[in-house]
Image 1 (cartoon, rainbow, N blue to C red):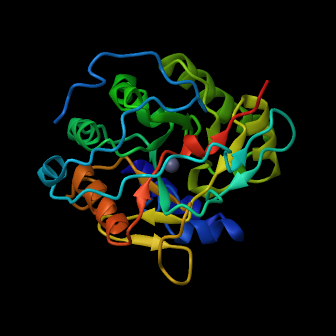
Image 2: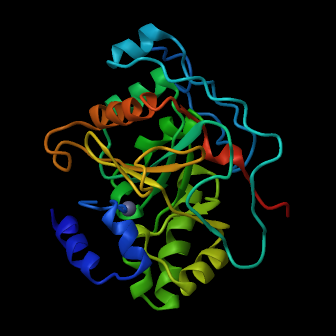
Length: 289
Ligand SMILES: [Zn+2]
């Protein structure tokens, strides 16, 4: 597809530390129960204590998707390990400092809008964080509302998915502020976090993000492919607090594999290493204003 070809070209223009991220699949490395969330409910403000139902522990429900239940996530620490400030340079983090055996799943862009994925998350209640890019989601903003209603937060991923570090500050601000405005209007809550496309950012990105509203830049430690994960750590294992990157992708991007099969594979990789999945925003204290 056109965008993917463009991404390929863009990769080669990015160097240095960023290239490490691209090599492990930075965004674009290549790229049941039904009794909850049927009706829309007010969005959970970013950083609020999640009122979402806990992850399902019903083996029968997981079996429907060819899976065995993940370990239950522990209660998030009362003292949040990441505390964000309303002012100053926005921090960048790639993992959450915690000793709990939890990882965090982030799902980027928004191109694929598979109704089965909504059913899957309603069944399993695995928490995700969605970094939505306007060009990918504008054809159907409504798709993401049932996912949000499950307690999953929507975060900023630019208007057009550019390599931010290749743009001047004014253009970077258009990208972040533009997506921030649209996501706030569509989903009723202002994103607290920003993920740069391809993981590429520079000093101006931090300025733009800070001025547009989000208070942190979120990177990742692992990148989910179709069946396997790409790791940045030499031991090729998950570690407590790791943030995992995945994408809303379908058969055309996944060599025929569906979004739900890819996601099931992701859960298997997590299960076989004995980790629970926790909600990223439950570990982050938003600024007190
Ligand atoms: Zn992306």
